[in-house]
Length: 390
Ligand code: ADP
Image 1 (spheres, rainbow, N blue to C red):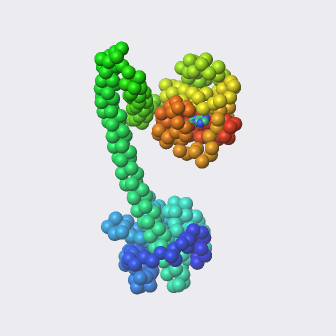
Image 2: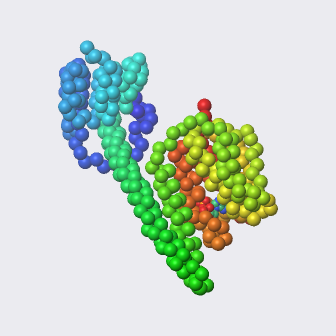
Image 3: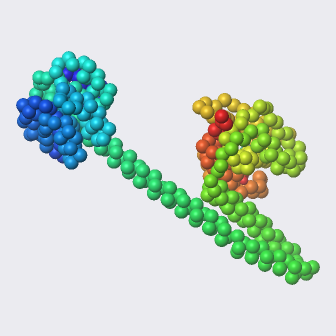
């Protein structure tokens, strides 16, 4: 901002680099006709200059013209300069505002800054060079505002396009997963007809082929089910309620009871756990995935998973899920969240590779974040951050 020839702040930043070939419109509003014509005379070589001695007419000119910069006198009958500039600021925020008034009229300047959010202040009588410099900078600011608006509009359009594409992709994923179910059911049914047909006469090689079909179709069934679950979770909206994390973990542990018994595993809750805003069923599914991974990718005796609270900032609550498993090397941290991406063969560790994609999807629709730290051979810690309940 320029005050009586002094630059007050942001005005000159980066403006010299922009070459703007357009003829911009500058409006002068001053109740003294002499001042209007003097300013017009001085600025008309570079700008399209409009002038008026009436603030009301000035507003009408702004409504009809694309005015880049307005210069306005503070003392005018009817409407004071700062009132006029406040009206301009509210209706045409991209019109850059300059106040012209008698030297050392500090109260006028304060009012214009506070109400009219002016860009610069020129004291009367003005210096010709200074006037040109201030108007040039003001035009530059206007060009920057226009650029910013254009970029924002472009961003909005791109975002809307992206949303449309994502939504089509979701529908497509869902339709594919849905349509694959039927042929898979048929393959499974034919395999079992063949098994019945051959009965006792089946030879070892035929038995091997049939069990191969059965194994593969079982895996395909699991992949399709996970894909359907993933796309369902993306399509259906979540309703957030007040959910105690202890209840979430209790239900997830109950669902994993057989696996826990089977592995002789220990699940420890170092409470109290926070209460969050969430969808209970989805959060149970999230913890079921994290806890079962902690037990599955684990060769320690006993496999142990600890759930405990951890600090979180800004209205959030966080929980750690810490295991003593095989760990994950840092280079895989991003990829393990991609659907069907696995680091091990099915033979080593069973699974489809959808668990963490589902987990992250659940956390993100809750407005939270799912991150991890891990040390190969030491264990992995997932951090689940959600919105805290009030
Ligand atoms: P799945 O469990 O079906 O393989 P996930 O999406 O849950 O699929 O996990 C993707 C991969 O990330 C796993 O195959 C495994 O390699 C790795 N992973 C996930 N959780 C852990 C964990 N707690 N410890 C070690 N590796 C893990």
